[in-house]
Structures are given as structure tokens and as C-alpha cells.
Length: 329
Image (cartoon, rainbow, N blue to C red; front, side, top):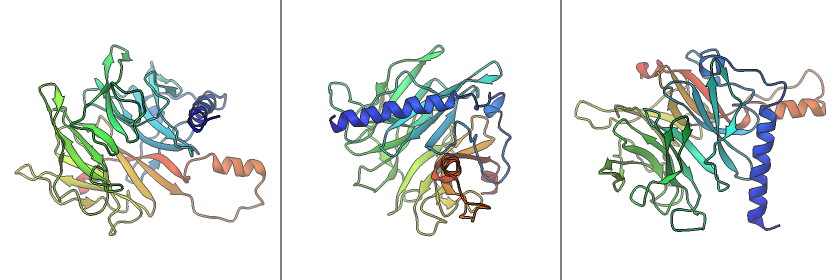
């Protein structure tokens, strides 16, 4: 089997296994807002540990404005990545389902417009006029068609580049903030592209109040563009990458970004920030591990499997925390 076929096969197997596990008899029925989870306080908590934050590598997540749709990304060791959706019908939530616009090339960094009418994501899928998959991630958008979604729309060459472009986040005026490696591999700076007369203009890099010689990526911008939360690996942080926040001053300029502190950031990685539509919670991705401990008795094979297939095993999980921490900052 050719390497490309192997990769596609692994992706399909991962999706089948994920959906099979998510539909097992031991999975509870989720009811009520936020999948029925108990709201967190000022200390970040794992968000749902049965089908969302598991032993797999879960990435970013987003709720629709009405709170009745939930989207999140899953990745495995082979690099296969897909976006899953859960929908609330009545008071009950469905189990995760692969989105109909999914591609075998992988889709990542799912976000939603503030009004819920559009989904944005990054993908390696072929751009219009080509049959070859991209070697770098580009931005795509899908518009809502009633209860379903339309076909993916390529956002064009002015906002996209020949390098990796990640985490597109739309403001109320349809301006998109994102991170890109267009200045070189591993550079990762944050850019902004305005929507004018039906197309996205050439992206502009944000000021040095946001971007530094270190990596800045995964920007969340508030719908009114009054504040920005993003990730950076600056050496003064608490770990490999931390969440930072910047507010606009009275002249509309970005203020020097500040670390969001040790209530959110840890020696591990924090990234992919997202504010819930009601403004109450900050969602983010964290790669955390429970501390090493000596078990009460030797681990059986089942113990090892259970310990591996759980949240906080060192792979990425989705966390949430009370958003009032922003007021303190």
C-alpha cells in the first residue's frame, strides 16, 4: 500500500474507532447547556471527560451562539485530524459526528462567526483549479444553509499564503485574525485581514505590542475587537506556551500584551483560546499530565489501558474556566 493510502486508511480507522467509542453503552446522555457539565470556577477544569476530553489528542472547540451546537477537533499520532459536531435536540445532546464537509486531507482549527452563520477552518485540501493537496494549511469558510452547512469556500490568495495559516477568527465586521508562518518556518505571527467589497484584503501583521521575536499564534478576538487572547512561547512564561491578553487603548491601538497568569497557565502548553458565546467561560486547549504517583498495587493491563485512555495523560485536552478572570487582568 502506498504511503498516501496508508495515511488515508489510518484517518478513516481513527474516525470509525472514535465514533464507535463515542456511541458505546457506557457513554452517558448529555443534557442541558454546555453538555450538562458543572460550570467551572476560577480554576480551569477538564471539559467533559467521556467523549470530548479523552485519551486522544483533542484540540480547539467552539459553541454556536445559541449554545446548541458544539464543534471540536481530534488528532492522532499519524497526523490525521478531523472536526466533529455535537447537536442539542430538545434537552439531549447527540454523540460526536464527523461533519459532512470533512476531507481526507484533514481539517483543523474550527471557529465560528459571531452570528453563527459561518464556520471557518484550516485545511490541506486542494484549492480550486488544482487536484493536489496543499503542502501548507489554508483558510476555508462554510455558510449555514438552514439546519445544514453548504460547500467549503476557499478564502483566496490575499489572506492565505504559501506557508501554514492557522486559527482564523472572525469579528463582527467579518475581519479575520489569524496566525501564520509566512515569515519563515516556526515564526508564527498574528495577522489581520479586512473584508471589503466581497473579498479579503492582503493581510497586515499586528504591531509589536502583540508580535515579538518569539512565536505568537492561535488568536481569539472579541467580536468588537476590543481585546485579543493568543498563545506565545515567550521565555518569561510559565511553560512551553502560555495564554496572553491585550486590550485596545482609547486610540484603538493594541496595548502591550500581558501573561494571563498561573491560574490558567502551567508548565505545560496552553493554546487555542475561545470565549463562550455568552461571555461566561474561557475555553482553551491544554497538554497537562497528572503527577507521577506510586500506585496502591501493581498496574494490571486493564489499569494501564484505563490510565492511558483518560484526560490529562500528556496529550491535549479541552479545558474551561470562569471568564471573570479577564476583569482581573
